[in-house]
Image (cartoon, rainbow, N blue to C red; front, top):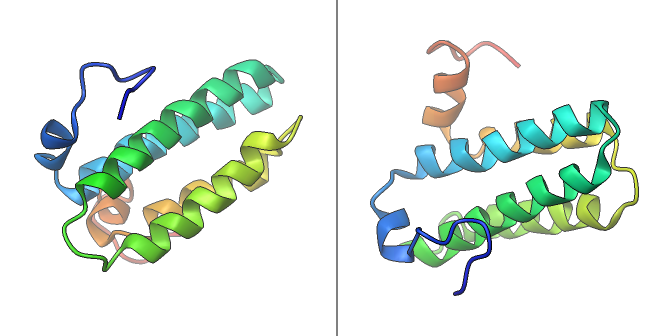
Length: 119
């Protein structure tokens, strides 16, 4: 796969990261998108979504087994729905990012100070 934004990454290199770190890196792009939504710079929002999609595609390619594939494909579908909108909403972006983080317990705990009871 030829990458536009993450040219230095390969599937082999991406596979070295634990799934929780992959999720957090995708979530970082979603978080950036949310900041650009608030600033109403929708061209930057699109670029954030493109970077998130690149990382998502790497994650899917790097998967060993299909256990998480269905969840990731549903996330991709929802992210693509936001991508094609002229003006995606902040809450839509936020909810999708939270759904992503909830796919992996370690990612959730990393963002919530090791506590299970937030969200």
